[in-house]
Image (cartoon, helix red, strand yellow):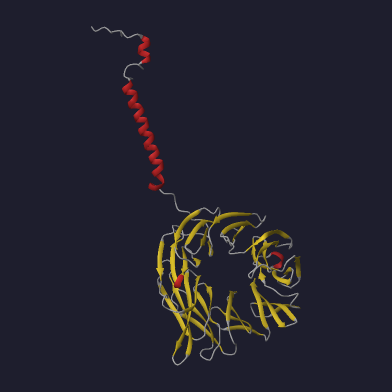
Length: 450
């Protein structure tokens, strides 16, 4: 029978050695294992975003461009999402791509979420174009082009063309063109696009046509020989509102004339809201009037008369029901006035220190520009929509580039130094979110669809 053997090693030395099996070699092995595990964990943490990348940002975007690049920012905080190097003159934001217009009418489309280049078009590089205007309507990218064709003996012919492109691929969907001194005015309606040939001439009369937005097939065409020009201005209440020597309304489905108001006086600015057309009419050098018409039958709802000094400015219609759906105008050189849509009665009048005119209605405030600042004016402050009281003023004034539609509490501006700022419409406080050099264009995209 085996008897247990007692260790001859003193108890103190046994404890200091760590006990049986815990030699210095074993300690080193354990330490190395721990370091290895720690290294693996660090590597996993470092490589995790690459192995399992986070979903791309799909919230509201703000796109800014200078001469040489386009940058996508998160609209809420200005964080850069992506940047691409490209020669850029202007931007067009569609639902899924951002299209840049570069030198020599070059179009380049980038994925709005990832920045990946989708397509490039250089079709028009060899054509001497007098107009090259991209527009985005009804999910289609439209290009308005115009050129003057000179032949021998000396003769010129103007030609206007409209191209409909798939914004995702750049592929041509259809083409519409005509010969003559034409200038297209486009309006988007569900499933169709309204095309207006603005100028009358000996070659062709004024025309307005409705085209199928997917195929370009003509649905109807209206011809006008007794007016010098026609400009489709808006689509409202199932009608195409047209400005000419007065106003007319065409039925959106058939193109038939609903009503017509002929005036010999020059038309000023106009606005449309809540089934009514509001218009500034320059009756004569010493008299200006504002009139409201019902879009259903063209009947005049009210009419007020004043002088160019008291009624002289831009109309801005409110789509809200506040103040009986007021519209705003520059009622005097140093004031902005709100009139009730149903009666024309003055709701409030705000007196200002400098010549001003309203530029936008956002989140219960009226943004106004200082008309004495530079050529195009600059944002000077905001008025309360209900009372006309000054909410806040900005000094120095800032040129307005765009108002970001996704966020009702902020508006986006840029300075000549290339600084993009967000302004809180409630308080007027500004925050710089992006610094660039010689920014040329800015655009917003409410939601980016992947």
